[in-house]
Length: 243
Image (cartoon, rainbow, N blue to C red; front, top):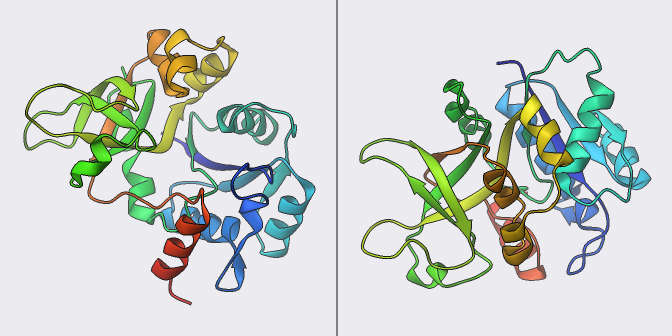
């Protein structure tokens, strides 16, 4: 594998406008994510910006950034467009999409997302962590992954993603972590597909891939990185990151 990491980021956010540039101990959030992605040391790291302000901040911090169409509908579309600009020679066959609102994500967690792609049948890899808080099972903001992970193993095939508490019966529930590693061909195919029926219903774009017959495997990790969507999330992230 020849991976590249691309971090999609845009200023527009309903609950936290200007989220990528929000200050966390003297540095914008997007720079915290950039540094963690660089520390993962799996390939070059770029920020795919939807706004000029993000480009300038990343450049000032010594990072690599490029401008993408501000009107793209999703982070996956932004990553795919950035990849087509950065790598016209198709040198990178795997692209890791690290969301720009994960300032506490650990480098080893980023590295873990490549593990399922050792199996050449897998199109897309992502991460899950076991749900330990019962309240989270019924929280629609916590996306659940239905995955067949054999006992004492760390990799399994994803069969469904849902905001509901699935599957039924006794056993583990898995929290889906929105970090993806796409084979390049799978990403290009994915963004060309129309929205799926279940994708629209659940508002989960990974369901588009499953509806289209793509294989998604998950790697089981120990911790859930804190996404920042609300002021409370931001305060929690500030508390977790050392000044």
